Length: 465
Length: 99
Image 1 (spheres, each protein chain N blue to C red):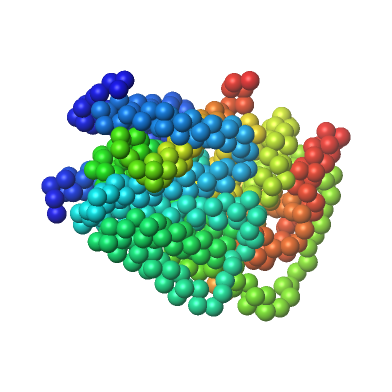
Image 2 (image 1 turned 180 degrees about the vertical axis):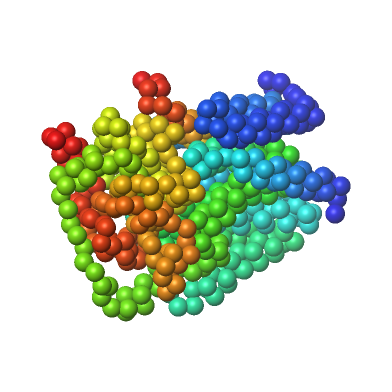
């Protein structure tokens, strides 16, 4: 109506979009170019959408634009208002939306192909099955991941006997329904397959513990990309295939990276129902040693007389919203000539890279943020390792105790520092439910209380000196 | 296997390899914005939703399902790019940069 571009012209526009995506992701490799890179990717998306709208076969503009207006409003409000601590939930929901959309495209196209009693060709049918099943499981799995992260559903693994058999059966049922829908030419069968795949998504994520959510979110990210690839195969559309493949690669790589940072296989994370092992661990009896509590004043003195302090932030810091005050404390120390660095474990927080974003929000310059491999050799020279709301990622049992469920996991070696100060609410074990012997180490002192209040007390005590 | 399928598979496999090479260069510092940014790219499925739902002669069912797909994909695109921009705007090298 407005214009009528040929398929070839639009395909060229898709090539431009694909180049924008590639260049945009390439620019994400440095924090200096990253923001422009994101704009380049977004420009590619706008090109793809606008040229699609101008394609001669598209003419229900009011309908399409209404959908875009609704989605854009929801997306913009969500992106503007979400708190940085809630970023994993936001990304989970975005993954789910992408997966759901891919399934929607597959189902609608199936209905179109079977409209006059026809059946889709085998190749297309295979792609439709893939998109529908992946989309359903990504949508529902993401919603459950959201619920766990938002603590609407309990974070500890939810398990029942025979769970994996049930899950396997439900998954097979979803695939089977989708497969038979093609020769039958019945859209409702495919719709049912979508629903069963969604049930599988719920069952799949429910038994995974809250501490493993970084892996799950990365995996769902990969699935949402692969869902788009599937839809691309359904429609023979290269824009979808390339865009989806890039996302699939990103999600897969991050999944492997996260699992590696926990020293576990992806299969173990997904099917291991982490955290239940704790009961057997508790039987080893009372752990020897005592906990030494300290006061803000003592810690302030200790920090002031240090040459080098390494701050180890964990999710507890984010929960207490202490990141801004920690930035202020670090500034105070820097003014006194103390060398301050932050040690960031790859799985600190609830999604890959989460801690960096939280600290960036608190205006901590990224030149002070050190990843695990770079900071571990520096702990032996540190006078104080200040652990704030981090637990498992500092647990020396990962290096020393083969009986520990986290044995072999790479950790931040805070126990190598001359002294360790742990800010912690109480002696309760962390998100994963594992005891931490670091707290009983003779060179460790504990400052109990809400992390933010403790840091504020520290700042007051520093200023009083 | 049709010629179209072979071409599509070729594009997919090459794009996936390219993706791995690109993502490997992204520092852990930026993994969260990487995730939300690529997430927005997976919203490219909106193109598919427009093609199916925007075509003349789509039935009510196709229209309804595509409409939901358009809404979801747009949330993915707009929410993803905007939130990534918001995050990347916070990263600074020195304390004095911006404000």
